[in-house]
Image: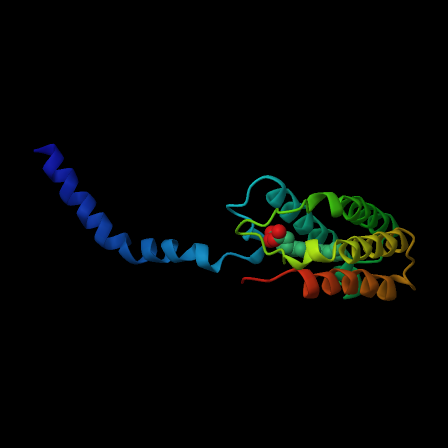
Length: 161
Ligand code: HEC
């Protein structure tokens, strides 16, 4: 019977693809942190996406700093402008009580909201400097931007991976 034949064939195929299938199943565990916001909803998903976009904005700048890309004032200006736009939205993306898994936000944000907002303001200032950076000032300015990201993460983000 054709069905028995095809079942036997597919069993044979299953045996052959067994190991690659297993590898496929373990792949999600090896996903980069940028995918960590899978499963998040609403404002939590929105802020994770915006944070990830800021990280992406820093990539071409880091490439310039490493000499992998020539300095491009226009590109730096554009990435600075994007970071500024996200930084402006940070306080509103953290409404009181928005702390469901898989959020990595620390409850401390809402106990020290003035400090949290102040750190978002610092990022705005650093982003404005980035928009005006020259080849000579870029290393310092980029360091300042990254220190602002890191400072806030150290205090208010509980990294789970
Ligand atoms: C005012 C505080 C603050 C500043 C400034 C800040 N972040 Fe974040 N960031 C957070 C918090 C809090 C989280 C965790 C949010 C959550 O999981 O709900 C986070 C999460 C992230 C994530 C993980 C997103 C995800 O998908 O889980 C990335 C990437 C990130 N930030 C990049 C940046 C970069 C790059 C900068 C600087 C350009 C920056 N952040 C500046 C507070 C900040």
